[in-house]
Structure formats: structure tokens, C-alpha cells
Picture (spheres, helix red, strand yellow):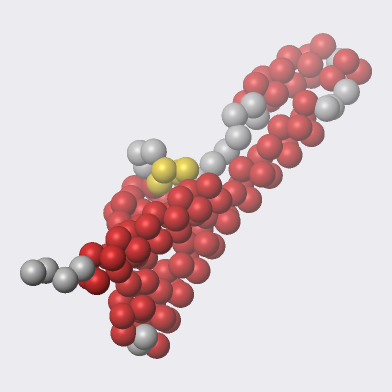
Length: 132
């Protein structure tokens, strides 16, 4: 699943910060309600996807902890070998990844919001400078 989701959304996540910054800048300059709805839609979509990715990470960590705390010492030896393989497979948490490098979680959402705000402030400052 990660491969298909990652390659579909790679272009969206490449430009998400710039897109949100431009929406914010236009919203400040014009105050248009249509822009507010577009900005809200893009932001809510980003929040939903990143929250889903964070939920996947949290749940996989809970599975890892539950498997780690199982009473393996009471298991028969045949089942213990299977348990060791299963324990090794749940050590790395699952994550929703936009290929090649973006892990979609709350940390990524925060970086998108911070970066879009910084770009928007740059545009705001740049537009207020008078060229002589």
C-alpha cells in the first residue's frame, strides 16, 4: 500500500507548502471567501492524511509493545520460534510514506504549516517593499 500511495501523492506533497503559502497570502490580500474555502479544504485534507499516518504509527507501536510484553517463556518451543520471527517483524513501526522521503505524520504537518507561514510572511514583506 505504501508504494501506491507514495507515488500518487508525490507531486502534491512536493508543492503543498508553497500552495498553502500562496493561498494564505492571497487570502490576506483579498479577503475572498472562495479562497478561504480552498485554503480550508487543502489544509483539512493535509490534516486528515497526516493524522491517519500518525495513527498508523501509534497503533503499530502499540502492537510492538503488546507483542514484546507477551509471556513468551510460557510458550512451547515450536511456537516460540514463530514468536521470535513475529517479534522481529513488528520492531519497525509502520508508516504512511510519500515516496521517496516524506513520512506523513504530525511532525510533517507541523513543518508544512511552519514553512507555509514563513513563505507567506516573506511574500507579505516582499510586497510591502517599495521599489525606487
